[in-house]
Length: 278
Length: 296
Image (cartoon, rainbow over all chains, first blue to last red; front, top):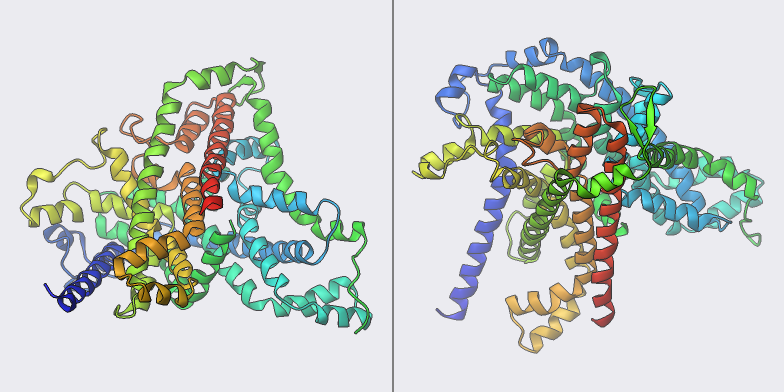
């Protein structure tokens, strides 16, 4: 084979390989999406065919009879509060770690770094014991605390490195004008950090929304469960009816997919920066 | 300007840092201390608990089930390093070429599984593996490979591999984007120089791309280890660690011991063991790979 031919075939093989992996990545998700619109009978005749008519009643049933609306509400509640707290605490902590030198700074820095390395699931049983002794189990607000803690290290590091790249002059000018620290922080620095803050918001939202083991262990009552845990109950009820089950799965991932498709550039950027930092 | 931003008083700094420190102590440090405490007791969650010293730990060291679950973590980790990093590297190199079509599309699609909840990934793969209605068996039938059909999640011999595939599937995208970013940061002149010296496609990858990415690869391997030491969600929903304990990983074992048998003392000891093993492996890999950076 001549050189040109060889290069052409390498290109062809590469493109095919890439396409194959993309199909493998997306097809299972698409399959679950379109199969959820079939009825059970149609699905069992041919598992791969597209639905001949659209059965949205699977969704109505999942949402109301399967009580997914309740789990969605709980997840929304936990996510909003967790993300808000994560951003607030992460911003303040990241700011102080990047701008000032003080006693204990390195210890704190190491502590948050440790938070990125420690296998958080090792804390599952310990945290359960602590919560049980303090009677904090089964409170949505206290479920927020571990969610915030595990989202914090990445957020702190992203914000810290962003602030280091921002010139300090604005803050100095504000200081000369007599602004106090808190108002400089929230009126001047916070708006400047908007790009990195939105990245942090998206990534911590995804983490909190998807988080399973702590939500599983720290919440017992049916009414307070978040969507990943509630979904396991739902799946347990409908193990035979596949399209029904798939509708339930889709209800739980629609928020995630919408956020991803709208903001994937941000998400990818933030995750690369966070990973390289770790 | 003139005046520089002064360092605030110590008390002011710690006032602002207070919430972060408190939440961290409450969720990480105190539970850790508590579980070290409880790991010295035989305790099933009730009022009575017996101090038994290091007995839980000596039991842990001799606990075949614990080491079996650690072995499972290791299998998943090794396969993930090979599968996720290997595939991601190949795809990243291809995606970097100028002639690739639909680059943005591929990247977006390949990364999508990363943002899904691991629980959902588990459920989706349960459906794929399903005996009668699964895609996998359907495809095998279509290819006239009926003899390859297995009870994917019910055969103790292969179940650990069956549950690893979804993990590899989900995380390829993360390493792909990390590698792509790293390849992009390699200066074009390096390649140009090599081209003048006569290096072609494959050689460029082996002699330039790979060595230039060494630091990134190191980070990726460490991410892969720490990520796989804590796997739980998808295996929990796919097999619950079964059949028997053939797909039980450490987190699942700690969970079963603590919440299935309600041996909270021993469950604490397992958790501590798990943390020590994971941190140990991460530090070990950092040391092993750190040494070579100096040479290269």
